[in-house]
Length: 144
Image (tube, rainbow, N blue to C red):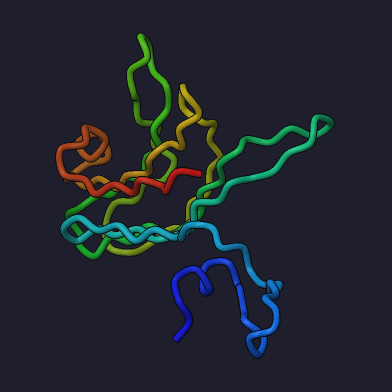
Protein backbone atom coordinates (compact mmCIF):
# COMPACT_ATOMS: atom_id res chain seq x y z
CA UNK A 1 0.00 0.00 0.00
CA UNK A 2 1.38 3.41 -0.94
CA UNK A 3 2.01 5.94 1.77
CA UNK A 4 -0.24 8.99 2.08
CA UNK A 5 2.42 11.16 0.45
CA UNK A 6 2.80 8.77 -2.46
CA UNK A 7 -0.96 8.54 -2.99
CA UNK A 8 -1.43 12.28 -2.67
CA UNK A 9 1.34 13.40 -4.99
CA UNK A 10 1.70 10.37 -7.26
CA UNK A 11 5.32 9.72 -6.21
CA UNK A 12 6.65 6.34 -7.24
CA UNK A 13 10.06 4.90 -6.31
CA UNK A 14 11.65 3.13 -9.25
CA UNK A 15 13.71 0.14 -8.05
CA UNK A 16 15.40 2.30 -5.45
CA UNK A 17 17.41 4.27 -8.03
CA UNK A 18 15.26 7.32 -8.68
CA UNK A 19 12.01 8.90 -7.80
CA UNK A 20 9.54 9.97 -10.49
CA UNK A 21 6.26 11.81 -10.39
CA UNK A 22 3.35 10.22 -12.22
CA UNK A 23 0.89 12.26 -14.19
CA UNK A 24 -2.59 11.80 -12.79
CA UNK A 25 -5.58 13.67 -11.50
CA UNK A 26 -4.91 16.64 -9.30
CA UNK A 27 -4.54 15.77 -5.64
CA UNK A 28 -6.98 18.45 -4.57
CA UNK A 29 -9.34 18.04 -1.66
CA UNK A 30 -12.54 16.09 -2.27
CA UNK A 31 -14.95 18.42 -4.06
CA UNK A 32 -18.12 16.36 -3.63
CA UNK A 33 -20.77 16.88 -0.99
CA UNK A 34 -23.58 14.73 0.38
CA UNK A 35 -26.00 16.51 2.72
CA UNK A 36 -29.08 15.19 4.52
CA UNK A 37 -31.56 16.47 7.06
CA UNK A 38 -34.66 14.43 7.80
CA UNK A 39 -36.29 13.28 4.58
CA UNK A 40 -34.43 15.84 2.44
CA UNK A 41 -31.03 15.25 0.84
CA UNK A 42 -28.69 16.92 -1.64
CA UNK A 43 -25.52 15.76 -3.32
CA UNK A 44 -23.24 17.21 -5.94
CA UNK A 45 -19.92 18.86 -6.71
CA UNK A 46 -18.24 22.06 -5.57
CA UNK A 47 -15.69 23.23 -8.13
CA UNK A 48 -13.13 26.02 -8.29
CA UNK A 49 -13.22 27.74 -11.69
CA UNK A 50 -10.39 29.33 -13.63
CA UNK A 51 -10.90 32.55 -15.53
CA UNK A 52 -9.08 34.84 -17.92
CA UNK A 53 -9.37 38.64 -17.94
CA UNK A 54 -11.13 38.64 -21.31
CA UNK A 55 -13.86 36.30 -20.08
CA UNK A 56 -14.15 36.50 -16.28
CA UNK A 57 -16.23 33.87 -14.48
CA UNK A 58 -17.24 33.45 -10.86
CA UNK A 59 -14.60 31.36 -9.05
CA UNK A 60 -17.02 28.79 -7.56
CA UNK A 61 -19.50 26.51 -9.38
CA UNK A 62 -21.92 24.29 -7.45
CA UNK A 63 -24.01 21.62 -9.20
CA UNK A 64 -26.07 18.74 -7.88
CA UNK A 65 -29.42 17.17 -7.10
CA UNK A 66 -31.96 17.97 -4.38
CA UNK A 67 -34.26 15.12 -3.34
CA UNK A 68 -37.30 15.23 -1.06
CA UNK A 69 -38.69 11.90 0.16
CA UNK A 70 -41.81 13.18 1.90
CA UNK A 71 -44.96 14.68 0.41
CA UNK A 72 -45.20 17.22 3.25
CA UNK A 73 -41.62 18.55 3.22
CA UNK A 74 -39.69 21.18 1.28
CA UNK A 75 -35.96 21.46 0.87
CA UNK A 76 -33.70 24.36 -0.11
CA UNK A 77 -30.05 24.46 -1.07
CA UNK A 78 -28.29 27.69 -0.17
CA UNK A 79 -24.85 29.25 -0.58
CA UNK A 80 -23.27 31.76 1.81
CA UNK A 81 -22.51 35.28 0.64
CA UNK A 82 -21.33 38.53 2.22
CA UNK A 83 -24.17 40.45 3.76
CA UNK A 84 -24.27 43.91 5.31
CA UNK A 85 -21.70 44.77 7.99
CA UNK A 86 -19.52 41.78 7.03
CA UNK A 87 -22.22 39.34 8.07
CA UNK A 88 -22.99 36.07 6.31
CA UNK A 89 -26.29 35.76 4.45
CA UNK A 90 -27.72 32.75 2.60
CA UNK A 91 -28.91 32.81 -1.02
CA UNK A 92 -31.30 30.05 -2.12
CA UNK A 93 -30.50 28.55 -5.51
CA UNK A 94 -32.30 25.20 -5.35
CA UNK A 95 -35.74 24.44 -3.90
CA UNK A 96 -38.27 21.65 -4.12
CA UNK A 97 -41.49 20.69 -2.31
CA UNK A 98 -43.20 17.31 -2.26
CA UNK A 99 -41.84 13.91 -3.17
CA UNK A 100 -39.31 13.93 -6.00
CA UNK A 101 -36.05 15.54 -7.02
CA UNK A 102 -34.61 18.39 -9.05
CA UNK A 103 -31.21 19.43 -10.33
CA UNK A 104 -29.51 22.68 -9.39
CA UNK A 105 -26.51 24.73 -10.47
CA UNK A 106 -25.13 28.11 -9.47
CA UNK A 107 -21.97 30.15 -9.33
CA UNK A 108 -20.65 32.18 -6.42
CA UNK A 109 -17.87 34.55 -5.50
CA UNK A 110 -15.44 34.11 -2.64
CA UNK A 111 -16.31 35.60 0.74
CA UNK A 112 -14.40 38.50 2.31
CA UNK A 113 -10.89 37.38 3.11
CA UNK A 114 -10.83 34.92 0.18
CA UNK A 115 -12.77 32.18 1.97
CA UNK A 116 -14.84 29.70 -0.04
CA UNK A 117 -18.58 29.93 0.72
CA UNK A 118 -20.36 27.10 2.50
CA UNK A 119 -23.29 25.23 0.98
CA UNK A 120 -26.20 24.18 3.17
CA UNK A 121 -29.35 22.11 2.85
CA UNK A 122 -32.37 23.04 4.96
CA UNK A 123 -35.83 21.54 5.35
CA UNK A 124 -39.23 22.84 6.37
CA UNK A 125 -42.92 22.44 5.65
CA UNK A 126 -42.74 25.37 3.18
CA UNK A 127 -39.90 26.98 1.24
CA UNK A 128 -40.06 30.06 3.49
CA UNK A 129 -39.76 27.92 6.64
CA UNK A 130 -36.88 25.95 5.11
CA UNK A 131 -35.08 29.21 4.24
CA UNK A 132 -35.10 30.23 7.91
CA UNK A 133 -32.36 27.67 8.46
CA UNK A 134 -33.54 25.97 11.65
CA UNK A 135 -32.98 22.37 10.46
CA UNK A 136 -29.92 22.21 8.20
CA UNK A 137 -26.81 20.28 7.19
CA UNK A 138 -23.82 22.21 5.81
CA UNK A 139 -20.81 21.49 3.60
CA UNK A 140 -17.63 23.45 4.36
CA UNK A 141 -15.12 23.19 1.51
CA UNK A 142 -11.49 22.46 2.31
CA UNK A 143 -9.18 25.46 2.23
CA UNK A 144 -7.67 25.99 -1.20
